[in-house]
Length: 233
View 1: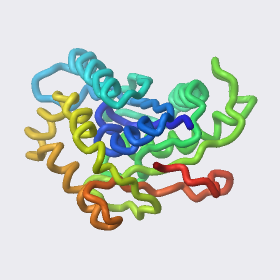
View 2: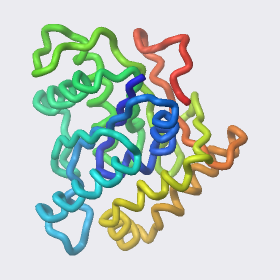
View 3: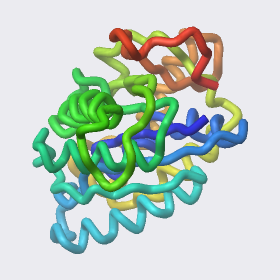
View 4: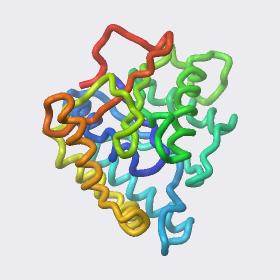
């Protein structure tokens, strides 16, 4: 299979679903990460242009650890909007990857960019299958299955699926630690250690499904998106 994660910010895929992507990779599937914004607002000292460049390098390193291909849409952090241009840019990514499964944020998550990313991804998956929506790549034959990632901090999501990520936990943490800028920002701005908060959420989800660490997802149950196949590892 081919698997695509659409995250609003450079560290979102690592935080919310890196374990699942690593499990897919172990099984021989292809994985990709699309980052919608450049994360250029989350720092006290680095100015936006320098911060965006730094976060791009960190995203590349994170995807290297995951073994995933990176797509970078370079929208401004905090100003992600559902526009024609952004829809078409994401449609093109979906058509390039041609995923069987797509992960993105839940629409009830805390960050405004996460909410917009959720809506954009739902829409773009549909548009990518329409032959008269024109981008550089040809349209896909069918709409991929869509799963919403856990909310922060593990609230406002009703999971339909759990993935045991205990065996790849150290790699998941390694991928997240590539995002040093975000570690600095979250620790100073929110007094939160990212690895610790991620562990709390994944342990909480693990309790629910009998695993040490687990990632939780909610499948989009709209018509045309459901399947009898087991799609998650």
